[in-house]
Length: 193
Image 1 (cartoon, rainbow, N blue to C red):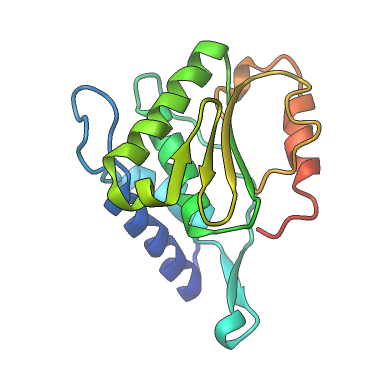
Image 2 (image 1 turned 90 degrees about the vertical axis):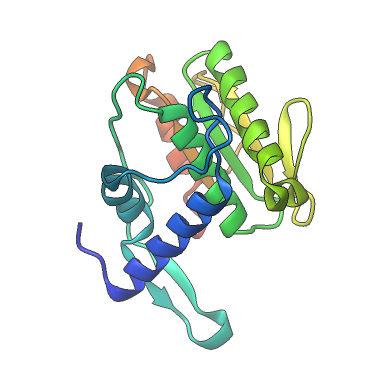
């Protein structure tokens, strides 16, 4: 993956936040910092966070990504859920948007419940995330910005009214049609990312 100097700095900042604040939620590594494997850093973090450029200048300088969509295949029992939830929390925390909307779309209701539990556990395990995010019954809300994190099961109509700043689609190969993907992409049309 080719990255500019700015892209390398940006990807490293996201990696640093992730490895500092995100903790494993599975039994074997529970509570331990989530250190990215080289393939996770190179194939996911660099692809998602490292391709782009700075726009504007001075205090208004922001990084604009060249890629707003990446597709990554991770094998069964490869830690997909912890990784996906950690990435979502990282983006939602590092890119504060007032009343922003962030989501993981899981392939089933059971998986959605598991992912929501993982997000709540990650927040509980880190004092800074705990100060920033408040878990409720069905959502997690940023106490300063009002941004919302949701986890919902797959449904063709699940996102028709949402304009997500960032979304992770889990197990896309199980989706019955491309309607959900299309809803995510069309909902992001006017959102800077």
